[in-house]
Length: 225
View 1: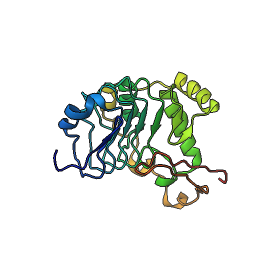
View 2 (view 1 turned 45 degrees about the vertical axis):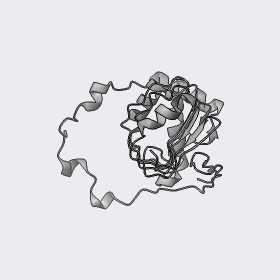
View 3 (view 1 turned 135 degrees about the horizontal axis):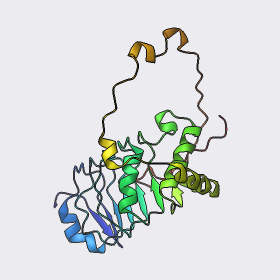
View 4 (view 1 turned 135 degrees about the vertical axis):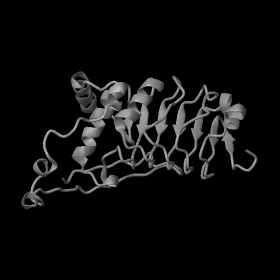
C-alpha cells in the first residue's frame, strides 16, 4: 500500500486515480474505524469488497470505475450518500436490490452515465429519465436527492403508486431462462416496409457540475421536448 497516493483528513479518505482493481484490505485496517467519507473515484474497481471495517461510513464515492450491477455490498446502516456515476451498471433492478438490502438509510444516490440510467448522456430523452426517477424513488422512499436533483413531492407520490403496483421477480426468477418464442422470427419482426416510420426526439439539455472528482452533481434540465 506504500505506493498509493492516499489522502486522509478529518474523516475523509481519498484514493483517487490509482488504477485500483480492488479495494486494498489494508485501507480498512488502517483507516476504517476513522473514516466517514470514502472517495475511490477514477480507478478500475469492478466489485466493492473489503469494506467490513468501514463501520462509520456516511458517504461512498465510486465515480469513474468499472462497477457492474453484480455487487455484494457490506451492510452499512450509517451510509447516507452513494455516488456510482460513470460506471458499467446495466441492470437497474438488480443493482437496486442490493442497495435497498444493504443501505437502508440512504438519502442520496447518483447513477448518471451508466447504461441503467436513461438520460441524455446515453442517448435517451427526458421522459425516459423521469420514468427512471419514479422507479428509483419507489425503491428508495427515504431518498432526498437522486443524481444531483432533489426528489420532488410529485416523484414521491408517483413512486408510492408505482411501488404499490409492481410485482418484482424473486432472485430465483431472475435466473430463469425465457421460453422459446411462440412465433417464428420472420413473423414476430416487422417487415422492412414498416421500418423508419417512427419519430424520436431529444430535448435540449444543460447541466451543472460542482466538485473536483465526482460526476454526481450533474443534472439534466429539459423543457424543450
